[in-house]
Image 1 (cartoon, helix red, strand yellow):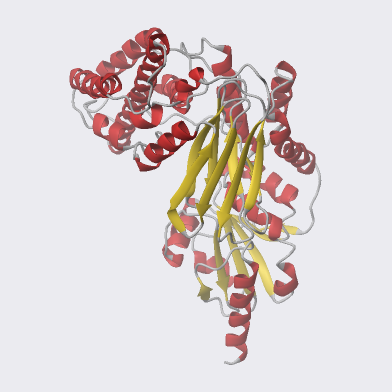
Image 2: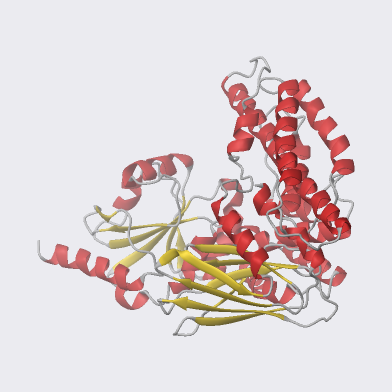
Length: 507
């Protein structure tokens, strides 16, 4: 982990007094001619992961221009190639790689040594940021039996990393003033503490989750897994952490620590499955009503808000007047933020969705019968071919595939009917219907209950719960293709539909 973290603050050594744009040029050998490069970059010391894309020329050449930044960072992704590059305000950087050779990635130009070093270690390390299910470190800590053992283990793990910072000098710092080396060391230790803060908080979440599952089976069971002793440990952590960790809004570890701390502090004293927040309550809490002792830095707050705003704007699931109001409020408070143009397309979608919610859309037929088996539902379309689209309002890939719905009509209609099955919960029924209207989803629609969802996955096989999922059903109600092509893969889908129609005509 430390090897990946040891570069960020070295750029204090390299910042320039001349404010000119940085440029990243590149060459992709054996470029496929269609795929895009995705990247996100810092702005004035913060780095919310708000990205954009660029398509290389037919020969694989591309050029990215970045706004002036004394200390900058850009995340770069193309298929299996991923890297983080650092730039100063006048840097010129070149990327070269062969699409057919995953080991071919190289960085040249300004900051070549630092970027090459960082790329080499970041791509070889296996300590990803924490997810809800945790990473190996947080899972290990969650299994420890006592708070004392957790404290001892975390202290040992952190000290081992800190010792490596003092012992190793992976970058040639010869000629650098001692004060700069001390500054870099100080910030590296800050990164270590932020990372293990995330590990601890996520471990507490996992431990409490396990306890709640036990209580769900037996409400009078003893609180052996998670109890007041763990609560006290969280409170002690909260009391000390703001004094031990300095704000670092350009660090993904620090920004993730803010998110995790705010999340854990909501519910760490609760021992039952609470009624979940409404969508608007969730939006308000995360964007406006958050409360954390760690939020003592304006840039950190802004990075936190922009990260969540980007998440909410990216999914129909969160589209509501409340989200639009808070978006407008943030825009008025921070009018000069460079990310607004990147967010504007999704802000426009949000406005369009709110308008669509108040209108009627006659091309969608809502099926209100509460079917409990997939077969019973399909039997209602006996004699018709079906293209089944299993989706949810919170599923971004599902929403993205809707843009191809008109293009596939040319080879589907009128022979093949479209059946959209949503796995949204009952409390999101209104949001589901709003999404149907906004995306103009012509066809039949079912919001599946729990019984239907379970039977559907059992009937279809494959990875249960993985969406979007597409299925072709023949006119006899039999599953012709349990994992059909998506609308975005039109040629493949067309062949599958033609094969289904041909098979029936030959019977």
